[in-house]
Picture 1 (cartoon, one colour):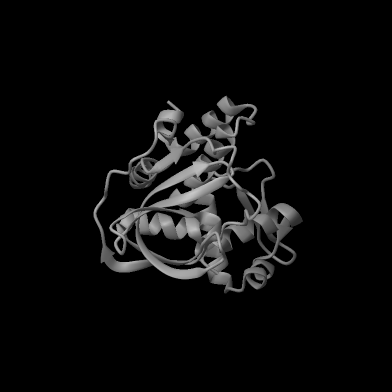
Picture 2 (cartoon, rainbow, N blue to C red):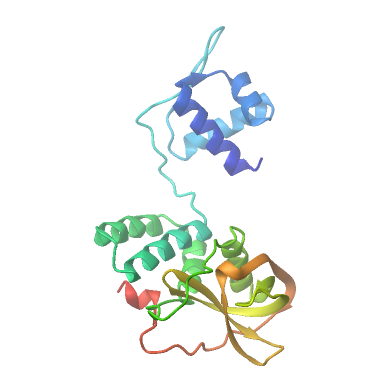
Length: 239
């Protein structure tokens, strides 16, 4: 279990039980007492109020009103929130959209400068538009959970993205492309990529992509992605 997941598990356990011994927490997350004690110190640094009671029967308690004061969201997580709000807004059925924007703004303000820089770079590639009413949605499927993190890594690092793609007729082929942008036409999401094999841009429906994998060391250059006038960058959508 990675550090972040382990600390989240400790907080969840303390919220549910009210208190727990260090030994019980160590058994719960599968690490040593020393590691749990380090995690508790780290959680306190993040703003959680955790009390300790020494001696037999003692343990640690999380103040029920305690909250985290430092942002721990990754760029992928913030981006996922942003594109979710953008997609629902584009569909025209998001109430309290101004509150959603205000909440996201607070999250962004708490991000460190390097994450803000990465977030802006990814937002520059996000475009939102309206889907044609003639589009066939009968075969709409779920999007691979690994696809967004893989796209983020490939886009920010400027490396190729490899995946298996299933076309409209159900035929599967292996692709390796240069990911340039995300296009959202609710409820369809697309990766817009430069296909070196065809020397042109291609749109890949994200629900037809499986086994996505960034190709380390195989870099590419950014290209201007042509979009129709009714498709705008997300940064303009929320301006």
